[in-house]
Image (cartoon, rainbow over all chains, first blue to last red; front, side):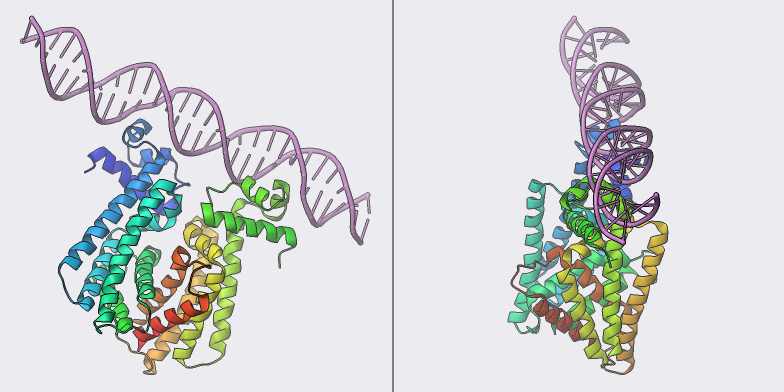
Length: 189
Length: 189
DNA sequence: GCCACCCTACCGACCGGTCGGTATGCTCAC
DNA sequence: GTGAGCATACCGACCGGTCGGTAGGGTGGC
């Protein structure tokens, strides 16, 4: 639960990282945009690096929680896949900046944090994979295309969203989420 | 047709940009890796920036040529989509580093070059879109999911390839290309 | 009631180091 | 001799991070 100043700093950092990239954004730019000073930033964060990590952490935490909640509902595989994709697409559409930073600057994570991150992503990936595989085993889904490729495609689409989704475009996130879920499920029948 | 020195510089730049990112890679690192000197680099390129642009140009030119060639064959929509995806996936798998740089550092392009790039990508996108729309109009494809969303998904998958494809993995590019094409076509039936 | 003491939150000038780019000159093929 | 193809030494701008200091609110002893 970040305080007001902390939040202002993170918000400004997300905006600037998304539009210019991490390295191209100076700490001075961040504090100017957030209307605080360098002292304030280094009071709350040990390094510029920590800002990136905090952005990732907030995003991953919320996505994992969403998926766990949906799986907890115990719906059939088709419904589960639809709900997971829909929630992922809408939440990503609401946070395009965070996701853009996430996708683009991921490799900048240090050794330790990268290990943590990979473990978390692996968990997410395999949870989703298990849903698809169960659907295939039960005969609800076709097995023509291997489950891992399907999962890769589905999650890849979401990561690419920031590249072309525009909040002021014609399609609302909900409509788009429906279309993407339709398409993926069509490929699974 | 770049000369030998020029090529060495570009190769080194691609490798370093892919593993560390553009900003995190210094010009000195590039020339050291390429076993040339700064003088040589600035003899062939006006700025570090130009290296990025050259990497993009080479990639886009070859992809556009591939697509034009395939469409020129005049195959049915289904076959055309399969061929385009297959060639895109295999050529991307062969050039993961270039694609990774492309996806990650695109936003760094200056105003003018960004405009040029957008025009080229738009052309690529709409050519592909036309194929899908024709397939839908002819009744070969279903129209449940709008053509533009399908194209977005298909191209998005390819852009995400560098995130998870490993040349030393179990699946060859050709096998993977087949699976991706199968999946997309399944969603179009 | 009040003052001494402390602590959190924040300020902003400053530093060492790095980076992209340049200026100048050599060398060798034609 | 002359221009393409480099090599080398160097510059000024900027960047992440530090550090001595301050403002103001809480708290306990008397």
